[in-house]
Length: 127
View 1 (cartoon, rainbow, N blue to C red):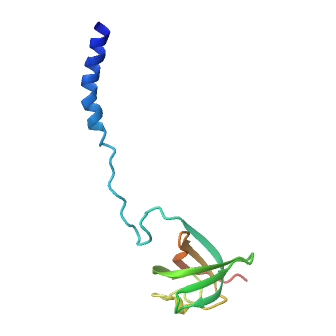
View 2 (view 1 turned 120 degrees about the vertical axis):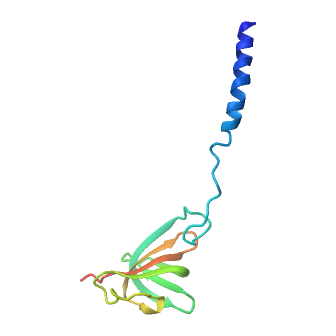
View 3 (view 1 turned 30 degrees about the vertical axis):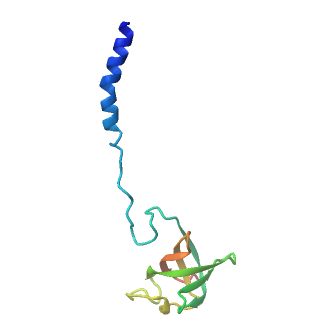
């Protein structure tokens, strides 16, 4: 009888504490970061290669890796264009897709989900 009374007493006193702790781990909804997709954890991939084709009117770039694999990638509204050090466009600001041409070496970071380019970077040609 005494054990039952102790068990009920513990239950009565621990129940409110357990209920209050229930909401303590709540988090707010994730917000958009960077403008790419609805998740701040979007999967990105990178490819190093040579520009094979640019379709500026469609916003499409075809890049070929050394092993021959080709990637067809889309330019997005927030795509960042950059030129690496010691390249022909190194000091130029406000680059766009029309500044690039086939044959140039690039490193492109893109969203794996929809193949949209997040960063388009001109690389120095290897001798």
